[in-house]
Image (tube, rainbow, N blue to C red):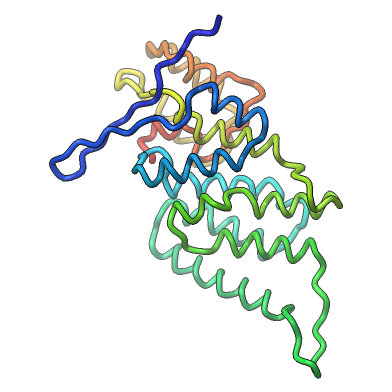
Length: 264
């Protein structure tokens, strides 16, 4: 019988009051939603957690999930404006203001491109826009919009799934559902149980590995990170298994790497 994990409980100080956060997902519910690819239930639950002030479901985390989904479908369409938006979004997710300014200008370029192919005046025909290009531009537009977390979570991953569906020839399908489920596990799975990093685990080797993977976006050293954590005394099975799972995809926003680097 699988060991029952402690539900996720976290707390934060608001002024002089302490507000205790409750876990929306029991482990069984999370596994059911992921297994069934029930993204709608996950989105509803995330919205509730945001309203509750859960510190794990942050705008940065949602943004990084959307970026990872977009990066996954980018080869399907090869749209240059989408590629540029994904790269800018990757940098803007770190929150620097000058990048956000460039990001907003990109959003304007996307909107203008979409307008060029909008409904034409009666006397001025416009060139047709194929379905895949339109889906790619709509994904770029969704990435470039500046929205609050609650608004962004309502559509998380949806625009990328639309690109994949159009590219597959079946607009009612979601060909990247398995990838999206894996990304949710990588970025958000610690909403299910309590996880923390002991200060003694954060050796120079551990931190250097985590920072190098984050900066390069190459997470192939995750098993090496697990070994380094274990050498430092880490005995948290969830942390070690996440690092060693050969089937698990890792991207910026990975909950283990974020905990090590103090990112939210």
